[in-house]
Image (tube, chains in turn brown, orange):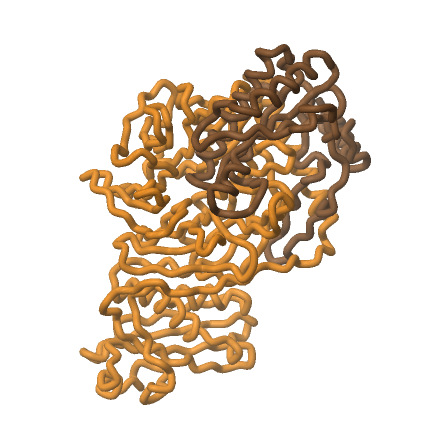
Amino acid sequence: MSQKVSMYRVMAVLLLVSVCALTACASKPSKPAGSGEAGMASAGTEGSGAANPNASGGGDDEIAGPQAGLLAKRVVYFDFDSSEIKGEGTDVVAAHAKYLAGSAGARVRLEGHTDERGSREYNIGLGERRAQAVRRALLLQGAADAQISTVSYGEERPAVAGHDETAWAKNRRVEIVYLATAPAPKPKP
Amino acid sequence: MKHMKARDFLRQRCVLSWTAALIGCLAAAIPAARAELQIEITSGVRDPVPIAIVPFASSGAAASDFDAAGIVQHDLEGSGRFRALPRERMPATPSRAEQVASPSWKAVGSDYVVVGRTQALDNGSLAVDFELVNTLTGARLATQRFTGAPGAMRNAAHRVSDAIYQKILGVRGAFATRIAYVAVDGEPPAQRYQLIVADADGANQHMILESRFPLMSPAWSPDGQWLAYVSFETKHSAVYVQLVRSGERRQVSARAGINGAPAWSPDGHKLALTLGASVGNPDIYVLDLTTQDLTRITDDPAIDTEPEWTPDGKSLFFTSDRAGSPQIYQIGASAGARPKRITFGGNYNARPRVSPDGSQLAMVTLDNGEYRIAIQDLGSGTVRMLSHGHLDESPSFAPNGATLIYSERESGRGSLATVSTDGLTGLRLKASQGEVREPAWGPFSP
């Protein structure tokens, strides 16, 4: 691919800032940093400070998704240092598995989280373990691999503030996020 | 493999162009409000060195506004190892060593006197000269001049502090160094994340990145020019390296799964990383930043993360729960090496950081239900607890190995704290708003 083509692709992202451009880029080698999503970061130059051009949000790939019955529930909670799906979480996961199995076009992102205790990068590992536990449960109950992506935020994005067991219990979770459009091809590891 | 390298090369070029465009858009950016860091000394040695730092004489208007002696005093007292004589108790205001009447300073209890001069030079730069006098012997122990642009005068004053610290305590000071850390503002789930670079005393803060999605794990390149970090701005973890001075950056890893815990090799050519692969099993890899070659170091179904290079660049420490609970291991930095377990006390030891001389390992350890900073002597295996908080984490050594900076949760809010590796002195850097965390202490500047 020539540099010129890459540049056009970059310009397209800048101009469109759309889901379309994002998914196209994700499948291509020239995916630029912060490809126009709502949470885009801004790099500042030392001394000048930097504003956040996307502080007010913007285009996003998240959609409301199905709302009937248990499907309205999107959070699976976990015990301390555990990635075992239990209690109501089992039913919530089963409902979403059934929905995904019957809706080939639907796709979800599983976002794994931990409470604030322990070291941060290790918690990224624990959050991923929880997201993978939900992924495996969805697959076992009929969802397809291509419908599911995972991300771990570790302790970095708590659902609630607070530094006691009440807050921690709400933060040890996997969030099931429904996404628009067909899945982009996964980047190779 | 060839194809992959070409692909990565294209990606980098693209990222650079895009970043340049973004920075262009930000040319008129308004500096964001930043939380000030306030220092609070939490502990000091029983017998600090009594020293008098006389206000420096100044010549030229540009020089007179700048209180170099005040900064030196702040540095030395903040180290917990010195006690400075209050200015109102000074018997005189000499600016040269030969003007120091030792007996009168000895009479007010000062073992040492620092005098100096700040002077505007013809070429527009400023010069700071200082002299250090021992009042017991009357000897002049040090004299040195530091010059720089008017904007670099704080740094010149910190270099004076470094020189005094070294002359009296025999260890190079680390006042003229920088720290990077993550600042977080707002209530969950709507938080704002900033990556900040500041002087080691918390002054002179610059935001180098801002995002609505988490930023974590800042790591300095050995030359102090670059920061590597993790950003979730694409709703997926990715590792970036960014030039601190210009803001120019590139994405170095956005593979499927986890991309985390970047650590620069001592030669600055490689990054150790945690990569999750597609099935979510984090392992340690080494990425060659020049060739883009990726070497897998660990291969275990457990969580392997938080790599840290030994100073010789030959091996890595890392955290793994392969034995059931997180413990620290060491492994050769090449494919197929076998890990050796390093920590055995308790059931939670994580986030290793090795001292610059390679003799000690700082870590986060679970101590009676509290997460604290511990230090293990790698020769004898002896472990000492250095901090006393509830949720202390992210230890990082000063480049002189004498001090660690870490984050703590003080009354529910993240702040930064330092502790000397002998455990005797400490201070806290608290943000005036929001919280600060994940400090990374930068290298000595040349």
